[in-house]
Image 1 (cartoon, helix red, strand yellow):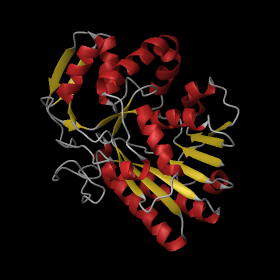
Image 2 (cartoon, one colour; image 1 turned 90 degrees about the horizontal axis):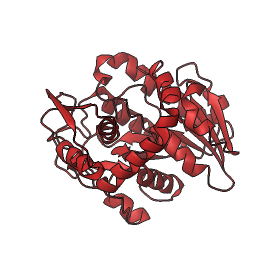
Image 3 (cartoon, helix red, strand yellow; image 1 turned 90 degrees about the vertical axis):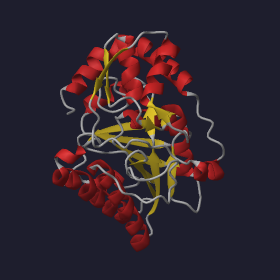
Length: 326
């Protein structure tokens, strides 16, 4: 099986590559905008992995990338929820328009399936009751969520028009190894890193915001199940299925790591949905009970990874990333 991963050097892409590369008779092509992003994957020397330095933009040769591919994983986003409302027209072009060009190439080259990582945390919006089901109305309050919903609709359209199969995974808030600890995404990972470094932890609001946090190994296992599975449903929520407040996250970090935290509270942000957690019953009916590890155990695993790895590669890898990621 030939697999193409777009946005492969990111957090989810790195972990997904590690798992997919273990499978037999699989050839994987990883695509991201700079080869500098593949610091971890390069060091693993997978014989069935090929890396291409290609940006996700309008003039990208998607025919070249999708030729001969069976499954295409679309992991790309050029923005994040907290800043996506700052340049809405540009981000719509960079994500939605370019995705349409990708899908055109997938149709021309007979790709069997497109797997799109959507956003369980942003597509539903704020005026809804949790847990959120896949048929809950989608009314996002940030451009990032609007882009995800629009791409979901494009996938439906291309399936209707051309028979292009797809799966949409509305992923909650993953955390764990290989996530940037100094980035603007990933509260659990960022807070854990700052706790280990004895740095200030910034909390927006009073800590009552609730999210659905899932350890990355659990998420990747489920993503692969959905990608490879045959089910009448094409859209799946993916999270733990319950909510945890930011205050509870901080308390768990303090308990799990036995550290005192330095917390600074800032005013809340309009783009932050107050409560968001997902109903994962559709996934569990199709593929079995997820059984995610606890937040306490996930934080301990994340901290162990940071202690072991970042002393070696933090300067070389992440400082170079800071130079090219806004």
